[in-house]
Image 1 (cartoon, rainbow, N blue to C red):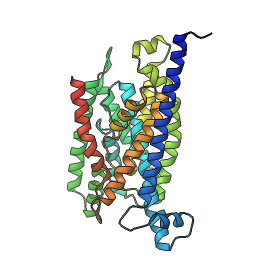
Image 2: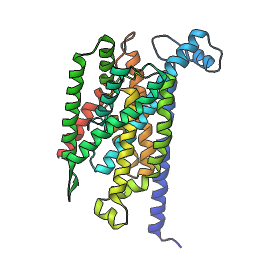
Image 3: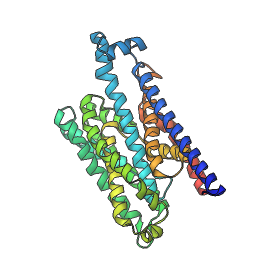
Length: 347
């Protein structure tokens, strides 16, 4: 027989569970709505009926080309990139116990981008082979950057100091952008355009080859991250308590950080330097569903996907026939939010 207190606790748990399900359902519905709006939005006009007819094979050659060769790959990439970057930020925040951590702010995205830029400068990115090589190269660049940040931020007996982590990442990111500036001096016009596009955070890889190069990575990494939700919950309690519960803390931290770096690197390889997604997505999800990673991680992924998808759609239509890079649209929201969080953390 359950006591009145136990009954109240069970009722509260059911209320929270229903609330979280409603929030996740709302995110899923908003993401679907964003997908539909984005298919119907662009310089070349397609009405909802035209889009629906084209989806089922009844469109003209021009409509089919617009929808299947230009819009759908870009929409899918924006959703995948948003989910990947947001999950990467969530992992880094959980492991480092730093609410301001983000793969873009820490320079991980910049390290991945530097490797991609160097490859494109020397070999180009137009061939089928190079498209599938880019995630591996981005992973190398991001991995070296992350290792450097980890070594400079880690202090024996104290672990990773949150403030030192941020300052180290910002400094390394500045150094990488300085290296890119030096490289720009020796570029021809096409190469310069590519570097400028990447730095602005434009989704430059917008065809099905880029979707196929990104998708296998996320199909492997995202399920692995979701399976580690309990580990992230335990790590959030603190290293001493986690060790007391029998968890190999150092090993789990290395694994999770490796996955976070891989997620950020593969996304950056096709999206350019989009920042703040790994900051905004986790914070928004945490405010709505709480800190338990079993619910937080999928909500975080949907929040990031929705953010990048909407930003890309807005950037494509706001100054037609030109477009604003997705990274700039995200930064318009992300930079003030970062300053707000920074001020709040100081208090």
